Image (cartoon, rainbow, N blue to C red; front, side):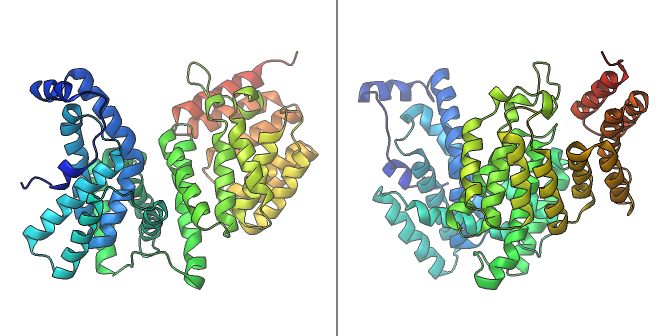
Length: 441
């Protein structure tokens, strides 16, 4: 393998003198502490740099696999070199230079067409000047990649999986676990998605005009699913954090898109409760029992500033307003349930799904009494869309308990617990069943 030329040109930062550097080289890869520090630096840099580098290399070559392979080789090279040479002053720039030069080497060996080779050569020469790539240009590459991953020609699950793998650098094994399939199955799905992009000639760009308006909801939908994967009781929090990061990117580059702003506000409001949602034993704590001092009030304030700019009436805007009612209430008792019920009346018009109708029944039950909530619950169930959905039983149990039939409520909570898949949710529902069984003091 040819040694990437830019590795030696990449900036290197170390507080050690040359003698210390020589001693590290003599240590055959650095000390254990050096290796641990380097691994930590590589992991921290990869969170931000991996998608940027992959996006840039895909833009140049159109080859997803090659872009990912070169980026992975750069990360591996960093693990090998940084314990010896020290962490560079610009770690992301170092990785970009090594990945780019590895790409150049591969293209030379493969005798790729001359135009692409010249483009990569120009980029390699630019990297040697050690001038940072303008942030806006790199971010734009990432936005192109998001829209490519979320193209409507791909199946919805493939869009989410490809986003996780390519943009968020989530290991294939972790994605497979999230989708409850084997790693080999997920590998095949990702390969088919990339092949589909190549065969269908899906353009690597952000659409404009009417096409952007058509495509943006699909992108926002993928980010919503990504956030949900992390926010769910048994989800991986890193997925939610990645969804927030990508939503910020969309808002930064498309500030005029109201639903993108609303989605970011929704994420911030929901995620603000992350540290208060579980007790020390890992059990879920219902919203009305959470310690509100543990909520992330800086995130809530940021979301409030975003909501002030909203004039739209899309589904994410109404969901964000509902979440804001909960997040800004000083206590559970002070929650403005009538405002929440009004928002659900609007949301069910914008997004007429069974789950929205179910949540609307909850809101009206708290705003106007359990009898009103139960009547709306009956309407929501009428079409059969909630059949088998365990939280329907939990909602009925809560409304029935508030009517005073605690024995029936406990039975409904237990029935809901039998149907949920997550262990944390099951324990939470059984706890509510026990509470409902206790006589009122």
